[in-house]
Length: 253
Image 1 (cartoon, one colour):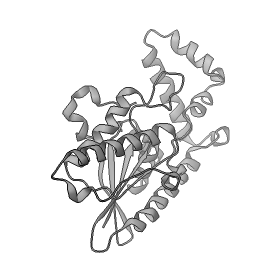
Image 2 (spheres, helix red, strand yellow):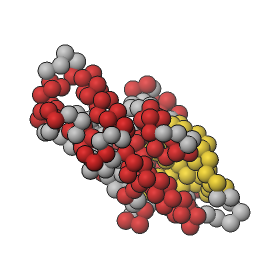
Image 3 (cartoon, helix red, strand yellow):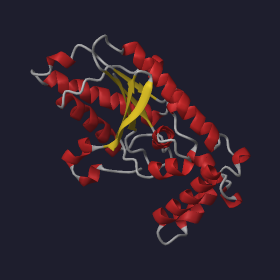
Image 4 (cartoon, one colour):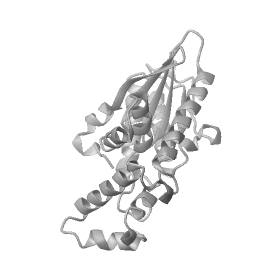
């Protein structure tokens, strides 16, 4: 049996000039996942990632922490033989998130620029709440399907891309499968991708995907099993690795 793990990236730099960079907390979250998997003797046979910076950096920090924890332990020698790495061959661009900026700016003619959005948010009594409201409205429009021609990538196109991502990781997973042994591969991606794939497995629509996306935790892991060509959801949004540090490590954005 093959297990495909889809991990959401660590916390990005929300509210900063370049959102795509991991925050300091995001780095810690990725490292906590690596340490947790090593300490619990979770063998990972290969690590993949989308090509976004926050996804790749999450993967690299996970790998560094995973191997550092294994190397520091005298009892985990069985897991040390497989040295994980991230390279061009393990990047899968179909795992990239949808274009948040495009979805937001296309939602209202008044938001044609980031400056216009910033002014709208800055005038609100609670800027973060106003941003959440604007983004919710934008997402509802994007998911609705009535304005598909407006977007660089509409929901239907994005959803089809996520299915290609799942097929690619499924193919890659079979390449590392070991005879008579279960195999596990881990891919770092984003919330929208995981939500779309999960909704598809449940045979649900875009609204289900949107509701799932709002609840996915940074570095939360969704597990899918592949057995006899059948894909099944094993677990969703598992983030127990963050509990050891306390509630402050659990973030949604």
